[in-house]
Image 1 (cartoon, rainbow, N blue to C red):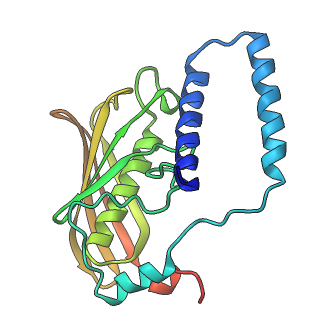
Image 2: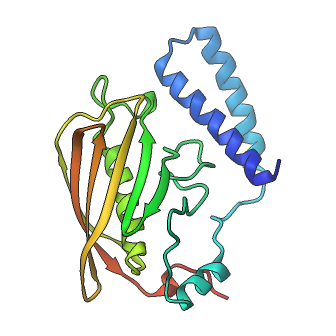
Length: 210
């Protein structure tokens, strides 16, 4: 198992612990033991070298210079420690993304730590899923862009513990503005709809200096 695979495995178990911590009653003794362990490990990890966000600038430049070709069906998660789609983020959602033609998709399950009102996911974490899925749609349309405006219409409660599906697509471009639309569904239920304007930026904003 590679170091990256080990990081993903540990992050997965930490996410599980986070959700269990929120959803279970722990005794004082359990809390004391857990806190001691966490403090010890935090102090140990704090002494290690900083780890900058991983990004393959050379591969990105090659993709950009070739006209930003789309990769059909690809499950490109982007940054491995992304809070929305990264497998190596212990605080993240670990949503599963893919592409089908011009459409960007992501499937996610909201576990206990993402609960807002009782028995439903917090609207903010749903907004994060929409933002990330819509950002990928803008890249599929050939634009390297950041979110400028995001408007969400919540149509139904977002359930916990079961997959929901986000779908996003580009509706057009106007100079640097990229217009994106999206929806989130659970089975036949429409949970949310969203519109966004992404602002295209220069490729230098996405890569490290050479």
